[in-house]
Length: 210
Image: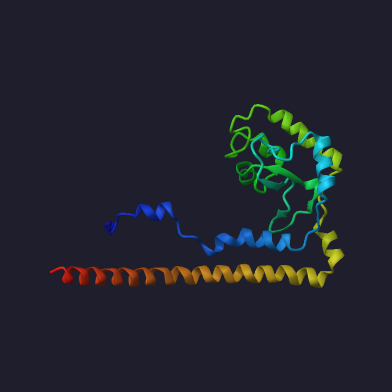
């Protein structure tokens, strides 16, 4: 059904057009994931969960079925490595809802937040305090330290290579933003072309039915 000139198409609200720049967070995560240490030992992780009272198949935050593995401490901060890595001491089982809600937030404030949409407290999970204590026990057993400063990572890699790598990320993001500007010019042109084609097709069908 056609819509009036000044009447918004409800389908456009239901299926909003993706933006190229909407992928910047994914680009940052990809650049971080590609370089940070990864050291998951299944047996060691299982033992760590067991001693902390964590069930591998249950979300550590709310108790629902866990289908994701979440970084308890976010690995990305400000578009760069946060100083926490993909290691036993930073991976916990999570459900999709908690994983998405927590995202890059600090777990202590998020799990007890009444305003963060989808947080265990906002959903009325009754044993949040018990789960909070269990996570603290997990970090204590795992020996979690403060985050590794970027300067230490830079020193391990070397200034030239480190700066070149992040400059490459910045160039990609810049190109994405420029492409978004071009897309905003192209989209209405193709929309008008499509409408004209549809109009011509409709006229042809009407004539064929005369």
